[in-house]
Length: 272
Image (cartoon, rainbow, N blue to C red):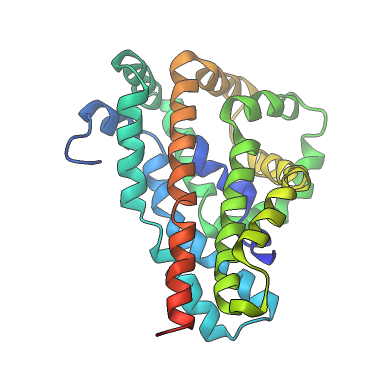
């Protein structure tokens, strides 16, 4: 599906590595200190834009219909709801000691600079820069310590794994839209879902390269020693728990609305 080329996996991973009235003040403080707050705020627009461009490039629908579908998709994802779920999951999934360690990390000067770089790289405006500079950065850092650190970073941040899951969610959103638009004339959502899930292996290979390009772009201003310090945080007990809880929480938040999107579109295209 063409939406895959629009919602960049290389940047989506930043959503995943980087409250309610009853939420823990500590968990809320941790989230505010991390880049997750600002990155998540961009997510509904990112999903909507990806679906819109994918539908337009498919040539199967008129621009007005593509805009309508993308708006429905964008409205199905609430940054505030995603944030509230993350805060609740952090409160339940991490001890106060772990939360304090995560907070202490994000309050360091290095962490603040890394957070700023991650937020900047996650904006749609950065997508073209990542693509345009990919070959140059690959050549510049070929065989370097920075390049060798990627596998370790990828494992600790669950970057490629999370980007594949998120990209599949985008594809399912587009599949839901197309199934609703085609009605009985085309494949069902279940058939499209099965096809998308069967392509995870191929998708992972492509996504891994794009995540690597995003890694080189995002962290190019940091020295290998600074990257090692960041990776050590991600590998720590508190850092790994934080990453696991945040990625799982966001993943559920972006996959669960898919079926409701399909239902809304069915009612739109087939009123009465």
